[in-house]
Image 1 (cartoon, helix red, strand yellow):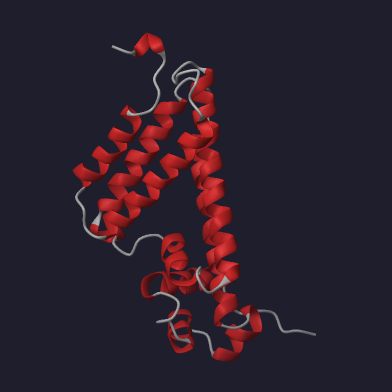
Image 2 (cartoon, helix red, strand yellow):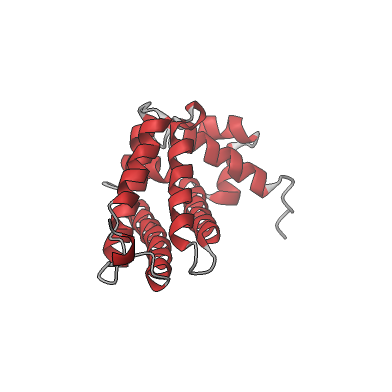
Length: 201
């Protein structure tokens, strides 16, 4: 009979996640993970597998929670859908400019470092980006149904564009671009959305 675990799995995985997030995959050793979690190599391997399996576990959990958080933030009636999306992206701009967020997001960091050589990471990242895009598209479809976008507006194309804006905010924010500039990018993107005729000047 296997012995019961004497550690908090969620706490251990948070420590593992933060270690990979702070240092990156290649720069993180098993010794780093042992120190961060307080567990021995045998305990880590026995519970979670090797370094790669550990990374995939925390990367997957991060990706799932990220998509779910965005969906929850954007939920609501058709009225106000466009403003919810705008406020969400303005929030991303503000967060991306914060010095405490210079490490970027784990999705972006893991994708940049590993996707070109790790099919599992690439597949999970793509699935996550598609999930985020779908949440944006849903919000834009609601806005169009409410008359806040022009009849000819294509929510799918606009959703893809706003996803690119979001990823760009995180990238240039990590480089140190100021909050006003990042928020200005969001406002410019929304000013360029196809407006209904009744709102044109």
